[in-house]
Amino acid sequence: MIGAFERAKRYIVSQSEEAEEGRKFDVPRGPCITISRETGAGAALLGEALIKFFEPYTKPGSPEWALFDRNLIERVLKDHNLPMSLSLIMEEEKYPSIQTMVSELLGKHPDTWALIRRTTETILKLAHVGNVIIIGRGSNIITARLNNVFHVRLVSEMSDKIKHIMKTHNLNREEAIKYIEKDDIGRKSYLKNYFHKDIDNPSLYHLVINTHAIPHEEAAEIIGRAVLRKYPRLFVNLPG
Figure 1 (cartoon, helix red, strand yellow):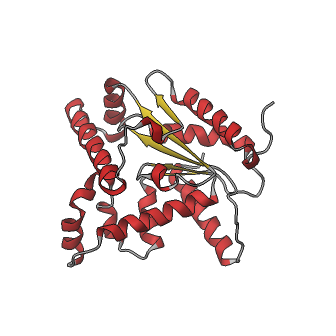
Figure 2 (tube, one colour):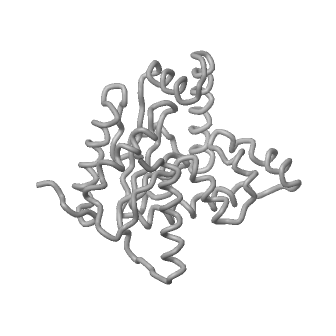
């Protein structure tokens, strides 16, 4: 099975090749799903489950589905010829102190909004192509006006989130709690500081799902069927 990172690389390569050949698409070739999440709610697990759900309905000739989470950072840096050393600081929770940290790396005072703008441009490019799932980084706000996007917010019980972070980050319980608290504060600050939005506002999303009450596979089917109904023109072999 192809991993999420390799799938994202293949997606990028295929779109770069099409751009070089001069093929342009004025309409999206597939939907874009944005996922906002509480830390530890399992966004990556849901994203992988969604890809499996959508594959039978994907139009021939359209891009293979890809998931962009932390690998989105690498895409931004490559798109805009930025040093890869910035990957260590282009994280949502670290943006409040980005001016100081980038200054130390590059020896100059950068324009924080330039980094935000570049991230925004990359997200819009991916969303316009379609057949993509984008996790975090204000992607639901950035793509709010596009006509092929579906926005999801994931929440969960603290006990579940702790177990998930302990497993995925190899942390003990106390470390996992601190990680979750710090990460969630960073994400809220990121959206508030740069997009002037409250990440917990349910009106920003088509669906808010509790992954404690609804397992990821079941949640993927709920979301997937909602997307099929909302954007039937972007799919084939629709269920009766």
